[in-house]
Every structure is written in structure tokens, then in C-alpha cells.
Length: 110
Length: 272
Image (cartoon, rainbow over all chains, first blue to last red; front, side, top):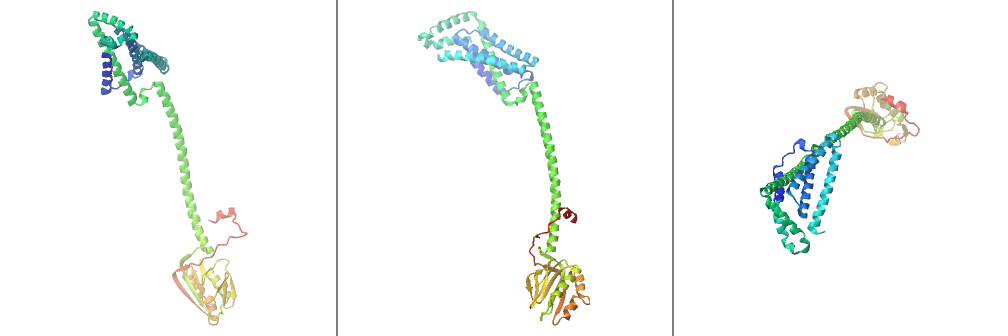
């Protein structure tokens, strides 16, 4: 329950304050958000599978975000930033979809 | 999260009767037990999870807001920006060249328009002049009115022709005889009781409306042996000249298109 409330609270805070994104963070924030979403969907799936673990969630969340940012950063340095971000988004998107499918199977038995 | 774990097994409790749920509920129970054994740690990691989720929500909202509010250029990469800038520069150059050529075209057309306006004015003026000469437009101006009364019809066509020639010599610019416009092709023929001018039979009195310098015209008619003398020598005939500041020659003559003569293109330009 706490994570859901915290998520809603975070969204509300973001909507209320609407801070500008610092320039250095701008290339990484979208990718980091997608990576965190992937971690969140994985957590929900693990929750439904009954194998959820706080530590795993925290580590996978942070690692996902950091790795995604690192990949984008490396891509920018190598001159293939936009292509690599696209690749990261595609991979994360596929994972989110498969997690969502698992969640759907749990929720609707279909 | 721990709390959710506590809740989760209790939540599907109603489902526990369902056989397919049986597999899950013991699993939840098994998880529940070691978590309580860990003591304060779950609470901390629980808060950590909540914090991460809050961060995610916050970042999500901020990112959505940023994407919506800022123009897409602000989030674009440097190389994309460079290519966009290149595109814009090339397009700007192209548009500038187009604007230059259009400006040149406009200047040319404006100049041409002024030239053609001037040419049109000149042509109109020339048409007026030619129209007065050809008798196709009414004319007005200073001049004289010459009235020849001839009850016995003794003034013949030769006198009228002399009168016309005399007036022309004196600088008459437009002339009509009793409502007939006098032009280059005007002729006078003797008829019974009058004179035929350009196909119309005129009977006395003959009224000449003449535009030109009134004094010159009057003097030209009044010289000894001139028109007035000649007329007065005819039996019963008399002539009177009135100088007037404005004479209206309103009689018109239909324009006849020449059958054979054509303007020579090279010569027409040198007239003006």
C-alpha cells in the first residue's frame, strides 16, 4: 500500500511544484523514468508471484536507472546517443510488456 | 511493502477457498513469517521502497510536464540541433534568394507600370489631338462665328471652299459648317437652293463655327478681296463675324477606317 500511496504522492508533488529539469539531467531523465517503470512493473509481477523482496526491488530499481543513464551517457560520448536511447527504450518496453502480460494473467487469469 | 505483504495474504482470504488460490496463500504465509523476524529492517526498506516509488512518480510527473511545456528543441540532442540549424539556415538562404528575386520582379513591374502609365497618358493625349483633327471628338475653345446670309442663293460652293481654306490658313483648328464637321476630306458641291457638304444639303444661312485665334481668323476674313469682300459682292448676300471667347464645335464625323492605307510601324514611332 505504501508504494502506491508514495507513487501518487510523488506524482502530486511533481504536478504541484513542476520544477524545471536541470540541463545536465535532461537527456537521462526520460530513460531513467522508463527504467524505473520497468523495475516497478517487475516488482508488481513479483508481488503477484509471491516472490517480492524489498532488497531486490531497491537494488534493481537503482541499478536499472543507473545502467540506463550510463548507457545513454556512453552513447552520447560515442556519438550514437539517440540510437542507443532508442535501443534502451525498446528493450525496457519489451520487458514492461512481458511483465504487464504476467500481471494480466495473474489478475484476469487470461 | 511489508505492510502490503501483510495485507496481501489477507486480501485474497476469501479466495482461499478456491482451489487455484491454495498454492499462493501458504507462500504468502511463509514470506510473512521471516519478515517479522527481521525486526526494524523491514520498516526501513519499506520506507526506501516508498521513497523510490515517490521519486519515480515525481520524476514521471516532472518529465511529462517538461515534455509538454518545453518546446521539443530544448530536449533535443546537440547533433539533432545542429542538423535542424543546418536545415533552417539552408531554408533561410533559399527563402532569402526567393525574396530577392521577387523584389527584383516587383521593382521591374513597378517601373514598367510607371512607363506604361506615361505611355498611356501620351497615347491618350495624342488620341485627343488626332480626334480633334479627324472630327471624331467635340472641341471647344476661343474662336469666331461666321454667319453668311444668302437669301438669293448666290453664294456657291467655290466661296464656301475659299472661306474654309482661308480659315485654315489663319490657323483654324476645328471647324463646322451649319452642323457639319469640316475635316480633310470635306467637299462642297453646288445644288439647287444650297450647297451639299459631305453628303448633306445645306441651305443659307451658312454658319461657320471656328476654333482658333479669334483676331487672326477675323483679320484673315476681313482682308480686302478676301472672303467677306467676295460674299458682299454677291447679290443679296452678307456676312458677319463674331469673335467669341468660347466656341463649341460639337458636330462629329464618323471615323472611316482606311481601306488601303496602313500605318508603317517604323514611322509611327518618330512622329511623337
